[in-house]
Length: 278
Ligand code: C2E
Ligand code: MG
Ligand code: MG
Ligand code: MG
Image 1 (cartoon, rainbow, N blue to C red):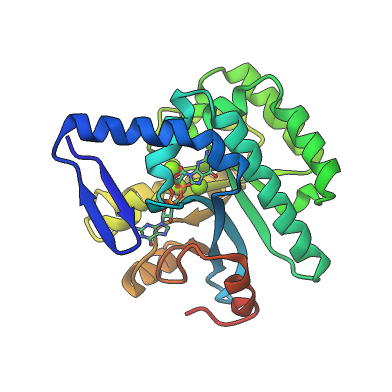
Image 2: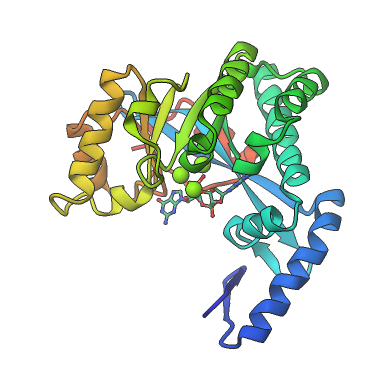
């Protein structure tokens, strides 16, 4: 068992279970204050239309800028927040921050769709839709600028409730994406019931794109499925030109990944607008 902390360029490995556990405990106990004192930051990663090679959207990705431990990855604290019942507060912080940024861009005449991750617990929370309504009022964001990314697991839990919540989100003007599509357990027959807009192809498949019968056929299947259901697709974790080319051959017209840009602060996003990001 190894827990990994990345603080700036330094990587620390815990070889000791007790040490890893005490690290988790520290993060868990310090997270509420971190939310209150704005230690969280939302970075944005470009999403590119590969017909024009221009940025058409961004995905907001949260980080914890810890005063002593440096930048902490969401993989290290989102699961903790979920276990400790803090994901609702954390999730609300992310939504507010993302809405405010989308509004700032809108006010500058910048048309960028902002994708925001919604955790399973958050999506199924009884006040989720009301929170969104309240945050839209508070921030004055146009919900049409916001794409809510839901993981497949959250979508299968309770089908009826999920479909109803999704319809309410759509009525408010949000679009909906299924994140990491194909890694969860949702059945294809259910997919038609979901009023969703986009399937996100996971990095795991993109990384295996050159292994026949592995990534390639999975991606090809997802793209065909999306076409027949009239959904958009976006490939995640695109790192190489080779991957871009294969994805283009498969008619995947939107991509996101280090090849086009890493998650970055909003002021670094703006100079990339209207540029060719090849
Ligand atoms: P995700 O939503 O699937 O986000 C994509 C992850 O892949 C991000 O990791 C992103 O930085 C990373 N990525 C993007 N392009 C590349 C690439 O070309 N190569 C590689 N190796 N990685 C790439 P990140 O930011 O560490 O986030 C990890 C996960 O944490 C996210 O996966 C999401 O599930 C969760 N997360 C992040 N922010 C939030 C949030 O605000 N709320 C919730 N509930 N979960 C979040
Ligand atoms: Mg996501
Ligand atoms: Mg994903
Ligand atoms: Mg994910």
